[in-house]
Length: 533
Image (cartoon, rainbow, N blue to C red; front, side, top):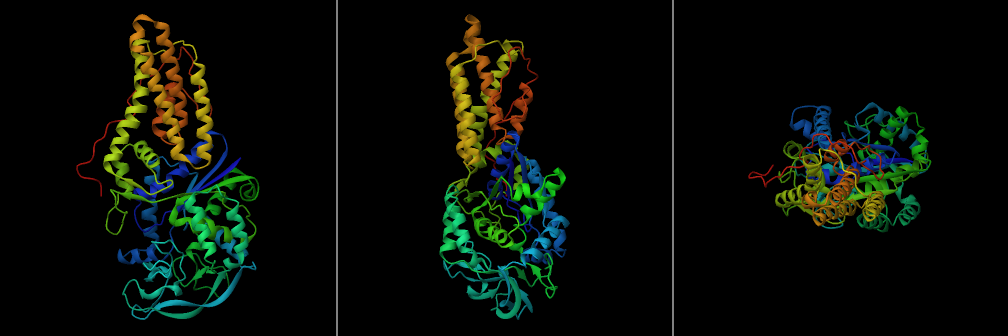
């Protein structure tokens, strides 16, 4: 089966923090799972490089927008590599293959009955003497009353119409803005309401936040949106008369899922239609702020274009991760930067915590105390201890040879049921529950080991000792396979020790197998005296 997994494209105007990683990590777990099942996986993402904030940052740093993009793209790539993200293609929106695809897509889109020209008001700052993009206009949100920009409200997540913002001012000089009329291309999202509502009704399996937010956007009345803007930094509009305008960022960055997967299809000699028209399953992984772009904007572009007819199947939309009880704020430097934490800690420890304590269904909090406690008590104390005491016992008392034991029927059934349960939960995006089910198997293994007391029976009942070690080894082998999508680095170690392949299937370590050298899987960590900035 063809599986598309699209991770949200992080924006190239600042470093990634742990909240970003928590929102994107589920995509890698789902991708690794389907690969282990031997499905044809297209796991794609990239760096979002266009838009006004990047131009502002480039101006402040006396450099070019492209250099800003390249700087953060390289940083993002390093972080993802350190954390084991297994993208099949991680690009950027300035790549030629993306630009070419977007322009070709838009050429066809403009022929649609859902695209029209309109003279519409655009913001202008007389003091700065320049037109302003929606993001550069700030004022009061007409929905919740909080301060917002003209693009999207950070408080209520409303996708704004810049002309509806109350008391609009320029974000740079804080002077009132004025509006002038200019011609732009619009997509008639309002005319797609029935199709979008039917689409939503078919997906009651989405997370509650995705269903609630999407329903709210539709119920409040869908608004047509401009797909061109008066900009210099962006993808050129492929239409005569629009030479000085650019494609609006939201109408091109979500097309990155298509452009990147098209590159992969060509490399693998697979028809693009096999992924975007025929039977396949599409996952989209992001934070809840990005819900409307994946459940309203992307489907609207696809419906209006009417060539790529596969709308998103699964919306994996995380809630927010806070830090020590406070909202993460990049402007106030209240964040744990991903580039710093990957330098100091085991990537599996980071991955484990961000799933086990991740904001899957509700906002959750990152604290250094809980991060260290869960590493020490669960990864090290429960899993690492079970693996090491079993295998090191074999090394010390059984000449490194897996003993001949009687396979326990109840344990075999438990392993089988765990595979079934974990598979279903991963496919449904219930990753926290899947991880807990695996650890339930590991806790059973620890209890089984303690109950059979092989350290005693080796002296007076070798058969019972052999049975205990043999069955514990089988639990470890299967736990490593089950955990591979979640904590790949330590799982690869265990798989190499037990000579296991990557396939998502029940494993058996034959009696007589000789273990290689065994090392410690996890190290104890302590709360940092000077927490990372």
